[in-house]
Image (tube, rainbow, N blue to C red; front, side, top):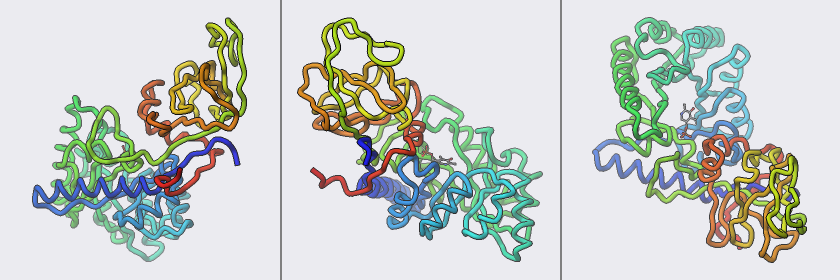
Amino acid sequence: MRHTVARVDLDALRGNVRAIRGLLEEGALASGRRPPGIIGVVKANAYGHGAADVARVLEAEGVAMLACADVDEGVALRDAGIGAPILVFGALGISDLDGIFSHRLTPTISSPWAGRALAEAAAARDTVLGCHVKVDTGMNRLGLRHDNLRRTLPDILQAPALRVDALYTHFATADEPESEHFGVQQQHFWEAREAAAALGLRTTVAHAANSAALLRDERTWLDFVRPGLLLYGIVPPPLMTTLPLEPVLSLQSRIVAVKGVRDGEGIGYGQSHRADGPRTVAVVPAGYADGVDWRLGNRGVVLVRGRRVPIVGRVSMDMMSIDVTGLDVSPGDEVVLLGRQGDERIDVREVAATIGTIPWELLCRLGARIEREYGNLKFEI
Ligand SMILES: *Cc1c(COP(=O)(O)O)cnc(C)c1O
């Protein structure tokens, strides 16, 4: 087994689902509505956590649906034994159509082409296909334009082999408290739902909220919410919450070498860091091939013996160096890249902020060669 391991705490995942559900139930109770169901977003290998294991927990927790990015991800979930309904967010290709039927996936119709292709494919199989229609309310990415439904929706609604089970949209700025666009999109979606009803859409089922919208605005909850990041215990920056969420993933490694460098010597590629005085440097076998971002060179920190220590020099493909001067460390000592050690903690929000990216990117880029260890970590010593 390699030294660098991602631990996936499935208990934390369970706790997060329950915390989110608690919030939804409380909010719904206060306003006398039914709490929305949860569509658990497990695209991109469940944000790097491992789609099958995460999906199994979410299914056992009774989420209404799972959602993935494309048909291949949905097929992989079914092959892993997942029985819950699976919504496919992404645009469809011709080669995807078989998988939708053979693996009972719920496709998104986000263009007139997709509507026609699915209607023909379902008719050819003599079946009626349940699908969700995505409305573009201002993200200007996928979806039928909110102000053009009169042109695009009737063909979909009239296709005998299609059954539209829900209308949904996606927000561009739910995580930007200052943005007015969030309200504009909500208004557009409201109007789109009315227009769809007038055009003959039978269902009123609708969903819109990603993690940020779910946290920020109950009016976006509708019939289902679609948290991704929040399930994994990370609050979309810059938002804050009092919900008891726990990061599901932690990343650990072990020191494999310790050595002294002399005053003025450079460390690593490009000799981008110079020792100011005699220093003790430890080598950690985690590099950018493992998902440790190259930009963390000379910027990031890790935890060793309960202390924050700096990454010195560039991150290499397979390893990096850290400055452990003054600490009593030896090969085999644990290094935490993400997670807790003693009283210290490094979370993915902090790391993302250090290098100017977003937590979503860091999580789902976690290297494929890293082993993921699943378990109940709370009771581990
Ligand atoms: C990824 C995604 C989500 C989840 O987003 P988070 O910000 O991680 O909660 C929800 N809806 C759609 C359509 C998505 O693509």
